[in-house]
Image (cartoon, rainbow, N blue to C red; front, top):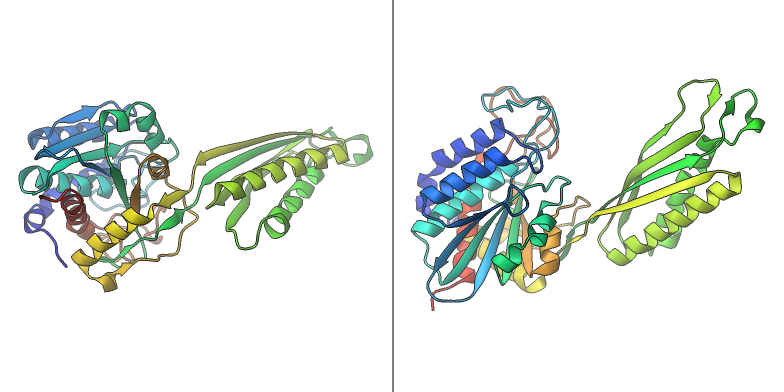
Length: 397
């Protein structure tokens, strides 16, 4: 494995930073302390920076040579609104907040790369270090872009990385084209007419209407959508009533839709609305249908994916890189950046969980799990990848 020696020598510092961030998690658009730490480190290392894009975002700027070419490297910073079940020394000190997705590690890896790129690296051009807020549902990538990220920091391509539990440390996964799904949610209210449960004929039962809608929606996946197109429609909540002998006035259905293709999403949203409204009318009920598109599918660009794959294979060996990894129905707002700029997103193996300190929770080391913890063994690996990528993308002529 071709790791960079000066980064390895700073391993203890990177671990300290990562664990400090883990102990002090901040939710989307609240990452003030995290941003202050990032900005302080960049300033200490002589790296100019921009603050305030996306409210709490930080962008470091490292320019060497005279080339106008530039590349962006992105790490997310926010935590999740979860109660941590671990009780090791760096457990969250903020009740109901936890770094359960490894953004503490992502931030530390990019900081590790930042120091080397500023002090040792040989390249010709500009590297933009993008420390992004609010990935967990806040659309921080989109907000940074709306507030001028790519205008103030013109770059030819942008790259991202996320830890992946279950994959061995020292391995990477990537694929060209769709790698992560779009994230969308629906909120449907069925407005019926309440009645005594012993006299249902005097009312319009919203529960029965909701059940009919829920069952009919599944035919969109099995009968309307092309079987070769991937999609998930999950009803995750149904709410109605407060007493066993009362037919409620209304009922609600909530859930999520995931696809890799916007055309498939268009079909699903249209059919869901049609079925909901027509079913309501058939039973004499009114239906309020709301469909919210959160994140688009994450689509890796072919050229940049081939480039990133080559960098990874040179660093860890071809056998350690799955260049055709199975896409996941999870979502990521880095997808917004890839809609505007060519680039590539990769997974870095986080292991099975044996790395966790004594006192970890009894649950698995999975993303968004209260027993999760980022694997610090990844810090020099991820930081080295960022450096190799930047130097290869901006070579000295």
